[in-house]
Image 1 (cartoon, protein in one colour):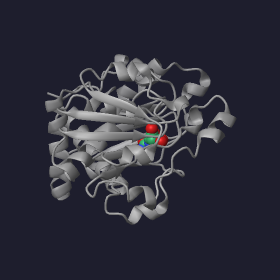
Image 2 (cartoon, helix red, strand yellow; image 1 turned 180 degrees about the vertical axis):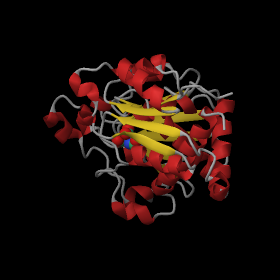
Image 3 (cartoon, protein in one colour; image 1 turned 90 degrees about the horizontal axis):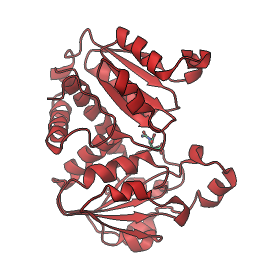
Length: 303
Ligand code: NCD
């Protein structure tokens, strides 16, 4: 049962629970009319302490499409945090007003801190460089829709694996499926953190510098943005920002049925010429993100 639960990290739900969310998301996608009133009278808070467009809008679109309503802020300077209010107090107060909360925060660990005091279902919409579990649900749904199964896949993750929360969440989630193999492609400075690698118990992984080499035999290529906002030294960012650029030439090296994912926003890491390639699924992925959030909201509210 997912009713009343929180989602802070991608393995808070069992594989079966995730499956139930993905299944409902597909049902909603095929018949959205059926769901336009299920959240009537329900209120979602979107507390965004860090800039975001797609995640916040997709939560808002999701709740609106279910017939519910949304309150919140997209700019922390508009919240009482600027008066010195603690995160715990903000959550305790907001939970008096709403039925379900989603929050994005720049500090890693802020989501578990908030969930711990929330009497209402709490959804982590990204906490610092830590986790982004609703992006992971989105990724899993997109993979399932294109590859039929979440087992037997070789997945390359490329770019900023150090600061990218989407790849931390996704690696952990995918490692629970059968016969998964990861190839982590990054500059030395932006390698997948040891802590994340240690949690991939039983799953094979290798680390590479070259995208050309990695792209040849993978089923999924997950590209990521170099996370400018997490760098202490902007010169370091400037030096690393164009480490990997996926273009048509590199796509020619890949399998015919490989798919390319990206949580977006993209900067330079995928040339726009790749968008026309039928293997580019990142805009479909954004669409699925809304359906998966609709399904998640329904499940956590027990509807
Ligand atoms: C990601 C994030 O916020 O971590 N974006 C998103 O939610 N779609 C990826 C990123 O910002 O690079």
